[in-house]
Image 1: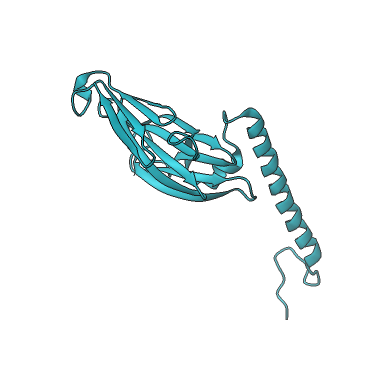
Image 2: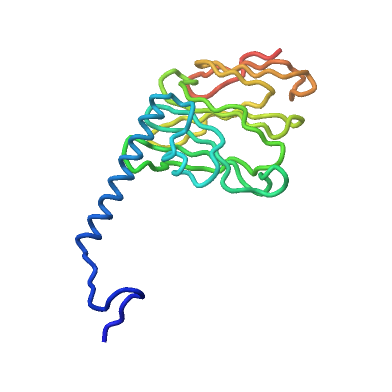
Length: 210
């Protein structure tokens, strides 16, 4: 004796060809929608993050920058507690590839625990070290009183490689040069107002302090 589905005739048989056809159409629709979303984002520049890129990370996207066919994304992994919705969550970064569909995350890592007072100042993509390699950077405020840190990552082979961190009230990235300034001498580690770092081919080194 066969058992039928509720509301379905026992003599009715599922059409496997029709089911496979519907699944194929669904996949095609998703791929086409992804292509359209990515094309519109490329046309508009990096002012908005495409929905397929946002869907590739498991959290709330806070900032992003486009580098070639990759997207560097800064996000919070879940809704946190307290009035700010950050406490207990984590800040993370991800590299999302869009050259091949479906869109996918090729690297993802935790940055720090989130807390009230955190603020993402900016996210940028460029060639900040030797002018040859693709890189991305972001600046995250812990709190206005504690200060902020800018981090630079090299994008190579679908992976994120940490290059340097710079702490200060303002961080300006140039090609091979990073300038860090402080609002007053009391906010800097050595009582300085400005630090200048230069890339020597391997790492950024402090070359001037005033």
